[in-house]
Length: 346
Image 1 (cartoon, rainbow, N blue to C red):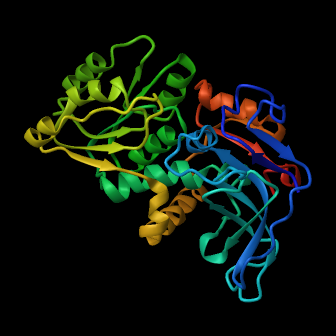
Image 2: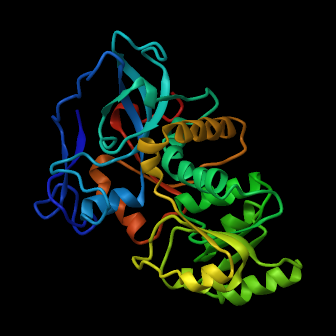
């Protein structure tokens, strides 16, 4: 099978995929993974999404550092190709999606049946491959951790990225007043088209002044929940508009800078800071992830959420795919479509 293999650590965007300098290459004859247990399911991958964490893993800068060589990749969709003798939940030919610690950047991947989800017929298979990590992260953060409720003010940083667009949509479903912060005309127009209550363009506006004006005009007290996948200076600035009793959701540090949240101000203003490492729920509270993804699949099938895909590449174009994330060209999700399942309407 074809698989994208990381042989050494480095920047996959610096050179063409497969060149001698690149840390990744496309192996044409990588062994097809066997069924590893009686309840194992092998999936023929249709599509897999790129997440910022995948890029960091190849750089060697992620909190989990897999042993070299490894196949990157996390969330994916596909068709059941083979099942173990004790599998009861799935049949060959079923449409499924899931997520893995590694391994989805390949034509086949094996999972235990307990980790797979049946995809509703109305769901596009390329789009659904982008759902588990990005939407799962935002759903667990906002619904499970922050318990976002109707009428609360949600401020989303990096709102045009994969997790950001997910957070914006989930916020609207919860009935929140949503403030979205992004950069660039195209991203701003998309967010406005999604019914966001207030959109701030980092490229042309002062974020804090714009948010304060909106809060004053709407006679609001401040931001109740800050969703932050960006970090850096923007986090520090955003604290100026947080309400008493606000919640801060630490999702990631796309800016490359880890912010300092002053404990003395958190004490005085009764802030709650949530660290959200979505993947660790699979170890500590897997039922939370399972319930979350099932609800998201239901929302997707009913048209309550939309997965925006800005770029789709092949395995051999991995350098371009990661470049779209690194250079912040992506609006929503970047996908890799596999040769064995190029159709999104299977």
